[in-house]
Structures are given as C-alpha cells and as structure tokens.
Image 1 (cartoon, helix red, strand yellow):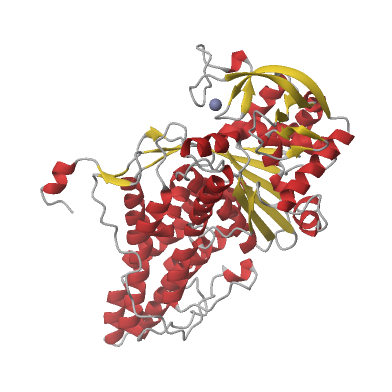
Image 2 (cartoon, rainbow, N blue to C red):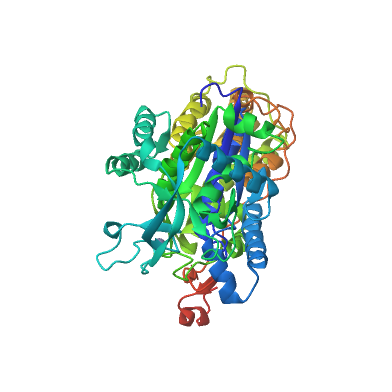
Length: 555
Ligand SMILES: [Zn+2]
C-alpha cells in the first residue's frame, strides 16, 4: 500500500448476475471487499468501495421468461435483494451500480467500445461456436468435459452461429504476460497468477464481444452504430469498474481520482471469473489506453454444509436469513476468521456458532467482562492511571509489546489478502490478556492491598489498565473486520470516538484515558445456543436435519 497516510484506493466486488437470490458465496465476497476497503480507510487512504448488479446477462432474460415477468422487473427485484444483503452485512459501499438503468454506465461502455474500436482492436467476423449461457462464455471443445459439457454447470453448450464483433485479444498477449510477470498487474494468490500465465502461454484467442440483438431478445446495450447487435454482457459488465466512476461522461472527476490517479485499483472476484478479470479486462483497457487494475484478488468458493452451491444447480440458500438470525457480526466473523486467503471453505451453522462462541463469547467477551467487572469491584468502575513505566510489571509490559507489533503483523497479512492471518495476530493480544488475568491474579492483589500492601495496589492498577487497554486496542483493530462488534466493545469501555484520528495514534498503547468511567459490565456476546442439528439447508434457509432428536427435548 506504500505511503498509507495519503492517496486514494479503489476496491470493487464483481457484479453478480441477478437471475436469482444471493447465496452465501456473495456474502463472502461482499464481506472481504468491505474489509479491504475499511482497512484502507482506517489506515488513512481515501477509499471507494464499488459494488452493484449485472443486469444485462442473457441468464436474466431466461429467468424472467420462466417467471413470466418483464426482464426489467425481474432484475429490479433481484438487484434489490443483493443490495439488501450488502446492507445487512454492514458493507459500506459508496455506490451500487445497476448496468441496465444507470445512464452513466451506458454512456461509459459506449465510450469504452469506441476507444477500443478507434485503436483497431475490434472487427466484425462470422462465427460459429459452443456457448454456455450459464457462463455467458464461448468454449472450445477441449475446454469441456469429455462428454462435451461445461465444467462449471455440467450442461451442454448451445451451438451458436452468427456475425459478431470480435476483440483482438491475441494482440495483447505479450504485453499482458509482461505486466503480470513484473507484478505491475498483481494477481493474488500466487496460484491464480500462475494459472493466468499458463492460460496466456497456451495462446490467446480473439473473442466475440457482441451478440445479435435477436438472440439477446433485444436486452442489453446496443453496439455503437450497429443496432442489429448488442454488446456481449462481459464487455458491458467489466466496464462497470470505470463507468461507475463516470468514465466517458460529463463528470469524470471520480474516474480521475479513483482510477486514473489512484494509488490502488483492487478487484475482488471469485475463482470462476479469473480469465475475464486478469486477461480480457486488462486487454480492453490496454486497447483503450487506460490504466490497468493494480491487483486482482481471487477468493475461493464456499460449500454449504459440505455441498457445492450454485444458483444454476438450484441449491443456493439465502444468507439474509442467516444475518437476520445471528447478526452481521457473527456472519462476518465466521467468513473472515474461517476462510484462508483465496482458498475454498465450508459454511455451516454449527461451525458459525462454534467460532462465535469460542472467539467472541469466550475469548474476547469473557476478557472484557472479567476485566470490567474487576474494575467496577476494585476501582468503582474508574480506569486507573497508566503506570509511569508500563514495563515495570513484566506481564502487563508484555501486552504492550504485543500491541506495538500488531500494526505491522496485520499489514503483512492484509498484503496477502489473508484476514485469517490478520485475526491470528489480533488474537495474540486477546490471548496475552487472558493469560495476564490468570498469572497476575488481580483478586489476590486486591486482598493484599486491602491488608495494607501499597505495592500490590499499584500492581493491581497496572494489571487492570493493561487488560482494559488491550481490549480497547483489539476493538480498534477489529473495526474493519466486524464493525458492530468493535462498536459494542468501545461503547462499554466508554472510549472516546477517535475515528477521525490517525490510525497509528488510535492503536498506540496508552489511549485509554485514566479517569474514564466504564459502563457497567454486561456480557456483550452471549453464547449462541445452536442445536448441532441445525443446518443452513440447501433447499432454502435454516432447517433441522434430524427432527427426532429435537422432539426429545433438545433446544
Ligand atoms: Zn457454464
């Protein structure tokens, strides 16, 4: 991230097809992108988070036909569901683009097409190919299963034959290879970068970027100067990353700030669409003479209760129900704590509850509750003075040292896009504080103080201060990950709102002001009582798997 105190950053989610309801995989991408944006904002970068919906897909047209609805009504309804999910998950997006109705998008992709055409990157050809509507992509026979099926959808692609405009991708192979090899275009994790480089090494084929308006049922953005064709949905969808900033319109200031001159342009995407973001999109930008993304981060897929999820397979459960029941904090915590950078992970309600109970209820919640209870019992709820030499008490000093190392440890993990690793670092401070309670035994210090031992009283002050300060520092670091959890903790500590202060100052040891009166100790994260039979059912929502056990009186 370079100099983190100045500059701007731009973070995007992909824009999903809105032919159905969101599933928990969308929640993972929303939460990761939001974390990356909030983290950059916390460290002082002016950061814009972009999300939205891909309305112009042929899949949306087919879904509308099967529901007997006008396409515009279907995408309107479904896009609202995706927006509600982002809101429910505390995703702090700056704009939600809808590619069918945002006038700026239509103007922007038209300008992008014209820039590519002016550079000689587009021509019209006759074409015959195998098209998977699920993927909105042409495949060559060797990219299909031995039976000739799409590997993603296990359906047979349509044979499509028509006149189309082509993008001359093959022209850009050398330049793309150079940009990715030098890291000017970073693809993370490393395994995805290697996958892209070997895809380029096999030879890049020019690809079709339009459809006949008839095959697209007239739905989509018309090709400039050719009303018989609409733009291929990926050309249109990829353009959203700059059209959402006003590219090609009268007001290009956001584009200048967050794309053209931005310190970082980060796309967060799923592993199924790497080729579009790491090859097609950069090539389109090269052709148009525009800056490339700086990083494409590729997350893995989630399974739900051990099974693959996919809208087209019809087993995509709606995460809004999960958030309504357990809260955004619990869901975000699970998604960020459980999935390693870029790797696949499984989502299960039992694991969500176990994680929440072990980490938030036990480790952090109990720590705060014990420390604040002792503060109220021994010091009337008033934070004692920070000892003149915080290292005087070895265990309390050790906590300050762990806290001092956190900003760098978190930065290293976040540079690898690894929230789990970053939270491991934060949890070292939680664990250290819990150890301090056990080793310092504040209750024995209090007894000794009562018996007249003034040194014990000073040690008790030092321990109580260190415990509460550790909790405060942890909460500030948790803000980008689980903002609602952090806010609850800071509120109980009655910590002043420092969000406008520089990050380094906010997390510096000693921020908790002596004399602060904390709120009465109340457990903030009561354990989730989740029967181990409760599952996030593929057929839709929360359900119990073995009813018999419930009837015997289990909660
Ligand atoms: Zn497919």
